Amino acid sequence: MLLFTRRLPSIRYKGANHMAKYFEKRKPATNGSLSTDIMRHLHTRQHLGKAVVVCDNPASALSAARKQWLKLSRSVQKRRSSTLNADKILKYTHAVTHMQHMQFTTKSADYCDANVYFLTADSLANSLL
Image 1 (spheres, rainbow, N blue to C red):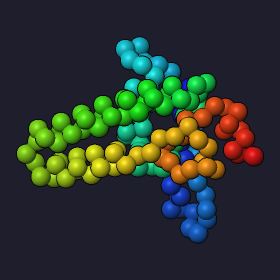
Image 2 (image 1 turned 180 degrees about the vertical axis):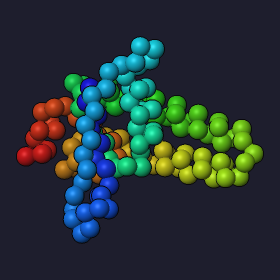
Image 3 (image 1 turned 90 degrees about the vertical axis):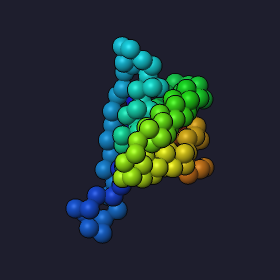
Image 4 (image 1 turned 30 degrees about the vertical axis):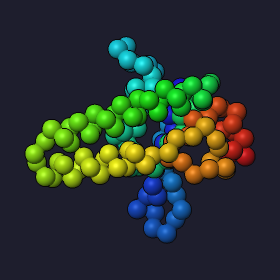
């Protein structure tokens, strides 16, 4: 499975419509699933822009990833409820809100606007043409 992240426009290119691209090949961790690993990875980088996950079966990958994403959201909610620090509560509240508004899809970027796309290599190639 390949994870492709498109970051926000770079500040050093003033006025340019340059998007930094980051490619990463992810392998399953020895103690967990690949979807768990990808969603933890995405959780730390969710504010950087859109992401594309290239896989053989996008529908099943989306289902497993969405389940792991909701688990991560619940764990952040639990951390928020267990702290008394107002700054941390605010930070966790913003994180949970952002996580709940993330959109996942198996459709190409040509047809919908989402944050995370699950595509086959062929559909990705067709959308780039």
